[in-house]
Length: 329
Image 1 (cartoon, one colour):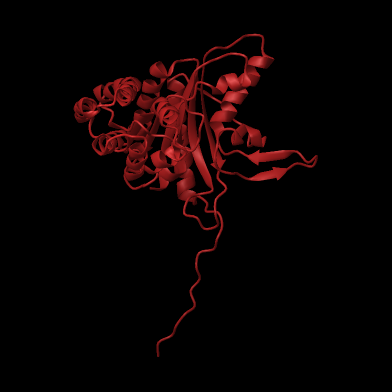
Image 2 (cartoon, rainbow, N blue to C red):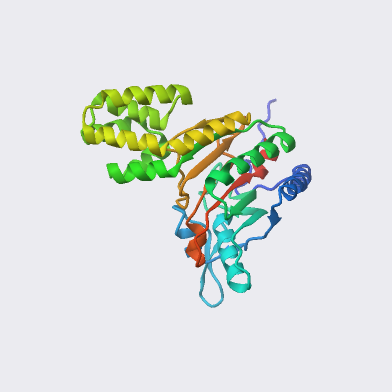
């Protein structure tokens, strides 16, 4: 006689790394640490909690908010970049020397407040790298080389880098003044951008072409030729001036893309690449590996973060890599 046995579903809650993956995490951490030490980066440890305004200024989602015994609002760490910049400002304030350059790295978990049983992890173990005092043009290529070394020598994986420049989005946002533009870019919604441009008086042909070239661009060589052709079909002088300014804004991104290709680092580019975190001011990048639909690497330049907390205006760039996901792929 057949018997039906009751089965249990896995319980809701937080996953943990089993002994094997915990061992792999520690082994991987040591290897990355050795590599970053060789690159002259120094370890730091951002605080686990901070005041909500540290994160709310730059993030569009919530984290774990709670209160201490005196009623002060606190927030569990959700982004270590802001805390490193804030810590650097405190270091300057409390020492007699005025540092203008620093290279830091950290290993720690960051926390996300998400729905119960949502497929993304609430706790993500990261390695983060922050460079302060060098321009994005100097620093970001070096950061991408470090990423390539980590991925190939430690994780034995190819990482596809996607490059963008927030300055392009900021310019277009000012010119086109569309309240839905950020959502359109996050979703890479070509029909929505096409419709928005037509409503602003662009022809159907030019609106469709510019939408495709900005949100789902072809290879760099093809893009340059198609953009050149695009300018010939735009009859309105004001619209042609906008197209020419977009082309100028793309020059730094094109130069970075070509430089990475010369270094045999696999890259693609997307002029309107942006993220929900809004402290980026210029270059922005994401990294993807086979086996994960999500970006396991995120970074870029944020030249306004240091001046937010210190009386000096210093550029900064960095990245964070999801190590816990990489070791379990």
